[in-house]
Length: 445
Image (cartoon, rainbow, N blue to C red; front, side):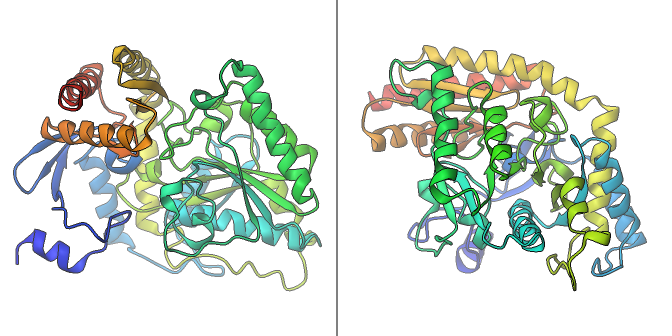
């Protein structure tokens, strides 16, 4: 059996069609901003693997930090009072970068488990305060928050709802704040007020004494790189504060340089949430690591002298604060600072978005949106949703033939290139995407 046959025989891929017999693309190596498959094809990676390989591929400094830590201490239990230096140092370093008083960390294995842990903390918190009825969670349509049971129940993308079961009694959707889908004739400011009012109405409908938290991505990632109207996050945070609803900012995608800052919540959108969840870029994808970052204010209300009787915090993972993954994150932070990655992203990101906006000249492109190195091209060729999806999928096929990997989702072409790209590399992404749209338009009329 060759690799393709072995793959088909043994592996269930995330988000794959179990009824499909499609051939897998097997990526065997990477260097810089390129990856190479087993057939010898070279691709410009415009999705950073999955929003995460910020430093690009083959970074020897990252590899050495991981290797050195493996030799020194590959693993030890994080349970109870046990710990290791890399996790302590990482928490300290991150605490210098987080907004407000978000200085307490629960390390996890992924973004999904970071979100799961954040929600579990919220429930634990209100139970400790004698408010066990505050359990309900408000999320948004087209959101993505993970694939563990509770996190998956907070996903608002229709395609993520299939034959699985989901929590239904304590989760509630509200509309996404996509300006491209606002009612005709409505101003952006009025659209913002509409979405904020809908959140408040949802809290009042459920009952403020029952709503525990609101969870929101600063920029909605895989649901279409939805950038909310100006002031949206500030206004929704004000609503949450009014009704004692905790605010979770899901920065699994937006943190660690993607928008030109370590964290986007405060620097880009002007808010200090109660909890921030992170993963992906925290290690540049070189190791699996996530974290729920919790406000000291919340932690102090339920710990120390304020702790409840028998207040065991029975949540965590075998690999929480894994010394090797934390060593990788520490090295990435060191490189980010030394190489001025954030400043670089702000410079080249503005160029990238300006170049992408030129694609609006195509009649098949309905919208181009994003911030810095997080972008989306929405294809609209008719009022028929399936025709739009077919067009975008064909664009993706042309891109791959032309040596570019984009992330297709319904009628969207989603882009999140490695942060080390220069302007010439970003121009190449736009040029190939432009050529692929042209070819698709010729084929599909």
